[in-house]
Length: 171
Image (cartoon, rainbow, N blue to C red; front, side, top):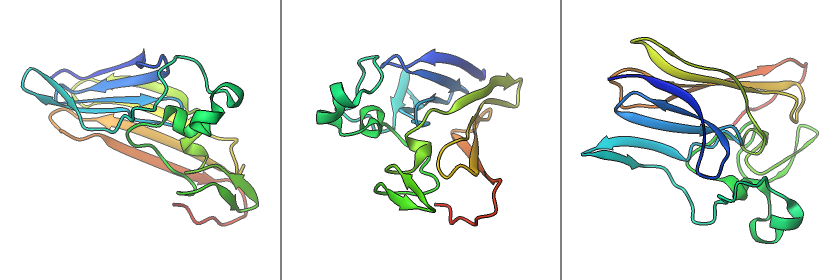
């Protein structure tokens, strides 16, 4: 089956990466690393196994506290779907390591920077993204989303780098 990796705009006009190996399709949004689609081949189509809530915005407009805050309460719920990385913490917003951290950490709330998307023929379809400069500032993140030929699995690898002297407990 043919491997595919390309940049797209998802249904809400968010920049995202599409990966496919013919058995599995994955969409990874830049905003929060949300994965609204993890679909498996079924009969003549694909079945999305990921949660896409009815309240997820598909307006194509960025979150605005003034325009959207009374309904969504924050940017995370505005674009939430599927699964997503929650680092360095998971759960409610709060203070940790001397920093104010949003619900599920900055990795779920900030934009991931695309580094590379591509296909290694007969080996993998992949996307590499990263995030740095979020609180705590001495942590940075690099993520690889990978599909292998004939594997009905979405592989995700996240590397956390601590460039400071403070030790952190990572979710």
